[in-house]
Image (cartoon, rainbow, N blue to C red; front, side, top):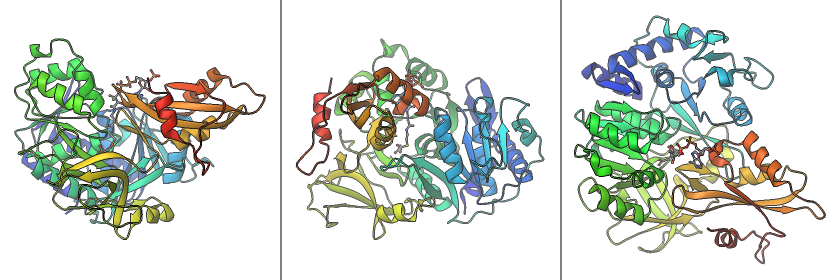
Length: 499
Ligand code: MLC
């Protein structure tokens, strides 16, 4: 079985099940039919199974049609954050060797088919204008191809770019089998059913919004209320209006829901499951949510490379500060720096093995090899298991900031800041932030005799980096604190610049 053929069974079982996409209503059968048209349209452009189709669009139906078309055809979706800048997109198009780029008019001008920058890019499809090289409407006008999806379990279905610790983004390849394993397990452990109504407020360019939420809902035959963006008040109003039962969000969203004055004016009694992931949920937010909303958030732990690894139970104790127990089919070990298992209760790096674990990084066999010990994936997260087996994450072995559920790798930003001729070196850190969990802060050291123009540095970040990666503050310092080995002591900087 592949993902498209499994989803198709539900489309046939619940053809009239609805997605309410802002003010548009679309049924499962209309969604699948539109995707089948786009599948044929892509095929007419020369897209074959295994070809990459990059999508950079805001959250919209065209995104979902194209992604489902890829699933049906056996081609590979490369979802890209609409906030990515030209430089960021150019890298992804070139690195993935995408054959087709589906985007809107605002991003179409630079990506010319078969330009020397992207020799393998054959077509740019524009969703919101008929002036582009290929209009999305022309794809939708094709005859639907309803034949079974030819993909095999080991075929790649999705490449998710994750920023790299060395600054170069890596494309995590997820196979049909990986995606199926994840959604089938979630279906069972979270008790999803066609009686559920999912409120979907997450971005769809990440596994959280695309796989866990959207695929998970289709796989259960859920009705979906889809908002293009997260707005706290609109979220509560939608739960009340549509009797939603399931919500998936990042901790920042829970924090913001708690800022709403008088949330009791909304009837939220239909809700059975508030799920949090992508970043650590503070025990303060967990407990505050219980007090205000009378519901216990279910925290789980996942990543692009592995889907979901652990979850607090649907029925049973949801421990504050813990990401729960390993999922059925997911093996977990906690090891010391030499790769030996630590004693129960001791902190070590979390390793994961299972059908959920990705195939490797696109065209980066060395990086892939470095990410595994034997066939165990090294998550880079540090944690321990309590006597009941619950996992508590306490830190990271790699230099990573998670801001509002988005991963930010300091190296990428440091390298950019160091391109400024007055900057000798830069250190980028995450400092605690009530709203975002961690806030990106940069510290820069001037070259001898030079003055750093901080406004110019801010402008540089604005031009080259998606908004969530941009430092919220940039500080100048005479020298970076280093240990005796010469390594920058980021923990010192984190305490110094903590607000
Ligand atoms: C937006 N901004 C951020 C930001 N998101 N800054 C820091 N961190 C973030 N995460 C900035 C914008 O650049 C902009 O800056 C300003 O905030 C307002 O932009 P916005 O678009 O209006 O943002 P907002 O709606 O407030 O978004 C916050 C958010 C969003 C938390 C709702 O970031 C979000 O949806 N996060 C979820 C990410 C997610 O899905 N992660 C899953 C990864 S998968 P300016 O300067 O222009 O004003 C994964 C695996 C797993 O991790 O297990 O789930």
